[in-house]
Length: 279
Image (cartoon, rainbow, N blue to C red; front, side):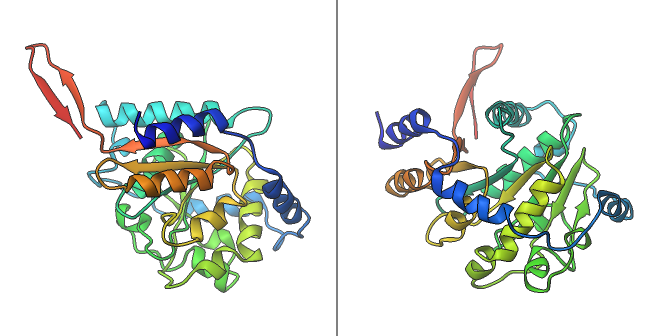
């Protein structure tokens, strides 16, 4: 058994709900006063003025009404996430991270969010918290003037930065702009208040956070401390095994839902008897 397999087995057996420290931190956030009074009606009205997007990026397979292997795999992931997050307590704030860059975490977050949003019962908000290297807006081919950075730095009301995509019930909160060192922003009380506000205002909505890689920066670890659950992306042939094992150990106490093994080569047999590989 490989080290990654051993780590995944260990994570599977030790997956737990939010740890005591996380609960303590959440209690502090719960006690905080709301940023400012806003109504759901105002939020909805602000979204109705936005022109729906046409999502046609090649890698966003779930945005197209096609039955492909990729779409099917993300639908399976969606079903698994729903099963793991809907219990006695709805774990609706989920971060998607990876060990290093270029492992497909942003595409995984986007496709998962779209798949969830296409379900009749689910409204989804996707938040780009990879402030060092934001990419959600690029995949959606938009150029937002404001985003999460402006909500954090300038106290911009959240509803001013939301964008309705027109794909299912998917709404996004883009980063707005790149920040060289966003750790102070992401660990600030303002960020905790934003998470609390999103979770409290829409208790039945999934809020997916596309975060920076877990190494070498501390951003993902900070965010994990006040979000409900973590989904980890590992790309075959890209991630260093030792780094993956270390990262899984770090996140096992942050309600690690599981690992998405990205870009794995799968072989399947056609009716003619030939085998093809699929990345």
